[in-house]
Each structure stands twice: as C-alpha cells, then as structure tokens.
Length: 538
Image 1 (cartoon, one colour):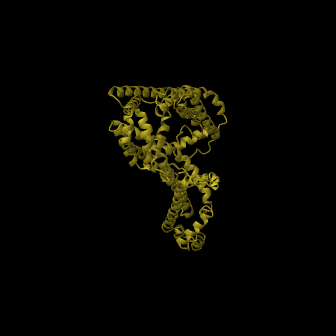
Image 2 (tube, one colour; image 1 turned 90 degrees about the vertical axis):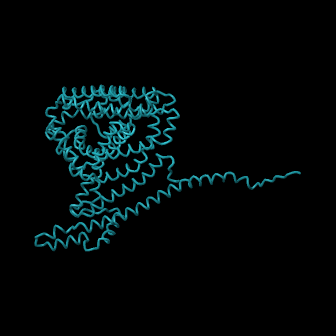
Image 3 (cartoon, one colour; image 1 turned 180 degrees about the vertical axis):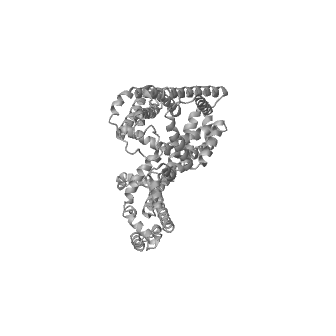
C-alpha cells in the first residue's frame, strides 16, 4: 500500500516568520520585571504622598508661625499678624494649604523660606553636598569595619575575641550619640591638641597599648596555644617598637610614610588581598600583586611633580590609571587564572595609591599646624573648614580632614555596633547550613567555604538594612551636625522647625522620603543579585 505525502507549497515561506515569536518572547520575559518596577514605584509614590500629607498636617497643628507676634508689645502687632497670615495663607485650612504646596511641587517649585526669602531648592543644594561629605565616609567605614569584625567574631565563636566584640557592640549600641560626640571633642580634639605640645608617650602607656594590641591580634588569629602566644609576642613587640619610634622621633609633629612605609604597607595589603581573593597558594596572583606594589613604590617620587597642581579631578584620573595598571600587571602574568590575578592586582593598586595620597597629605601637616589660623591645634571641634585659611589643594584637603574626623568617628561608632551584630548573627546561621557542610566534605579549603559560599549568603540580611540606613543617614545626622556645627541636612531640618518654616521642613522630608523609596526598590534588586533563588520576575 503506497503512501502519498503532499506538501503545501504555500507553507514554505512561513519559516522566516518563526523568528517573530522569539522576539516577542524576549519582550515578554522582561515584562514581569517592568510590571513589578512600575507597581513598586506607584505604590511607593502613594505612600510618599500620604506621608507628606501626615507630616504637613502635624507640622501645621504643632507649630505656630505667629507665636513671636502674639506676645509682641509692638504697637503694630495686629498689622504684622495680618500681613504674615496673608503671606503664609494661614487663614486657609491646613488640608487646602497642603494641596497648594503639592501643586507647586508638581511644577518643580519647592517654595521659599519665609524667614530669609531663599528658595528651598538652593538651600537643599548647599545642604546635600555637606551631608554627603559627612556621611559617605562614615557609611563606608561603618559597613566595612562592622562586616569584617562581625565575620571574624562569628568564625571565632565563643572565644575571648567574640565575647569582647559582643560586649563592645552592646556598649556602643546603647551609647547616645551626643554623649559620644562630647567625649570625642573633649579627648579627641582638646586632649590631643594639648598632647601635641609635647608628643612623648610614657613607657607605661607604651606597655599597656602594646599588650592590648598583642592580645587583640592573638584573639583574631586564634589556633593552637603556641600559635596564639607567638602572634601575641610578635604583635606586642611590633606595636611597642612603632610607639617608641613615634615618641622618640616626634613623628606626630612632622609625619610621613616615605617610600619604605608605602612599600611595607603595600606588601601587607597585597598579602591580605591575595589571601582573601585567591589564596596564598596562587603564586601568580601573589607575584602580580607584589609587582604592583613595587611599581607603585617606584612612582612615589615622580608623582610628586604631578601633585604640584593637584585637583580632585587629577586624583580621580590617577585612581583610574592605577586600577588599569593593576589589571595590566595581572594580565601580563597570564595563566589560567588571569582574571583572579588582575582582580588582586587592581585592588592592591588602589591600596598603594591611597597610601601615596595619604603620604602627600602628611607632607603639609607641619606647615598646616603652624598656620596662624590653626595655632598648633589642628583637630577642630566645630565647622566644616577653618575661616580665613588659604592654601593649595593639599592644605585645604588636610583642613577638611581635620574638621570631618570627629563627626565621622561619632557616626562610625554608633553604626558599627549594629552592623557587627547583624553580620555575626547572619554568618553563624549560614555556617550551620547543610550546603556549608557539603562544601567542606567536597574538600574545599576553609577560605573558599567562608568567602565564596558563606559570606555572600550572609550578606542577604544586610541588604535589607544597609540601603535604608544610607537613605536615612543622608537625611542628616541631626544630633552630630548640631554638636559639631555642620551645616547639612540635619541642621536645615532643625532650622526649619525652630523658625516654623513649613517649606524648609517639607523640602527636607521630600528628599529623605524619595531616597527611602529608591532604597527600598534597590533592596529588592540586591536580594536578587545575592540570592539566585530570588528573581524579580518570578
């Protein structure tokens, strides 16, 4: 029995059309994420709208812009009250005044301060950079130190180091920020400035600091008793030698790292980076990082000529060049793990470049300390810069550093405790998971198990609090700014409350609320990046 197969000729041209559903499927795959993003933005905007209404109503009922005139004895007090009432529309119900303010915001007008006549946009434009300068460094240091110390405490669970970190974290977490700031002004500024008159360290202070430093390092290193005692002795002797050098040479009056110091610190960074990213057994990564240190040390002297007319743009450009040079060195060493060598060399190059920058800033310390505006008291307790001080880029950079030092330490100490506790708890939970035991059973090194498998998953809970903390801190460290006389977002908010200026307060709240909305959306995408099981379009 024969079978006849017929082919429809009209079906032949249909093959190219099969590509069209593929294009549509790609668009369809991105549709859930776009829908999710649009839904989150819409809901967040509704929340922000409701929050601004609540804040405006609370402000309108809690603050009286006519308070100073109601108790005034001026003969034209009634006229002044009528004029201010008309200017601020106080005869209009607060709910209607809110919608009048909202209509102006939609058109891009945040209003003006009725006290000074200055626009809120310009006030925010000057306050936001000041807060960014104050908060950015403290956020990076608090997160970096908190995560590092919390991870080490988890790996050294129930040791003396773990107990000490737990105790210190609870103490710092419970301390009020204004008390920490006042103590830092007393000891970190006034006490240190007095100490610089004769920077000689007594022998018993050298002994105490050296023993404490040795005990901390031995607790971090851990291991057998012999290993702990060796690390304790080495750290104690090294700390004592450093303190004796600083005391006998008056290093604090004219500090510098020099080529030898930069090279020594760079070697330490190279070993630390390779140990964390590749393992010290990876010789190519280690040699490429050490080569990067040697190149950086060799360029210290030639870079002094480039630093004559320095600017932040030049420093940023040199940082990019340093990263590129580190990647090039790692690439030239080749091997199957070329990418690992490039990453380790690039990070080491950034560290060496930072040491070169710090050394150049140190070189102007002697002249800065003897300026008439400084008068041998370099650590400032108030303001963002020294009035009347003139100098080049390096003098002004050092002046900014001496002013921002104490506020940054205050914010770091308060935030550090929370990040340490979160990291420790998260790391302990992850280290007890089944996949960690499976990774160890497969024969992976402890470094790989800790850094690649445990650490990434331990960061997931931190992804919830870090973006929100960053957004909240950019709203202004109100207490810290008030104590140290820093004109940022916090000071702007306090000024608006004291002067009963609704436009200023609402402008501040609008910026902070918008940052919190962005941060909450960023949290979702960070979750998806850290945990493959979580997808935004799931």
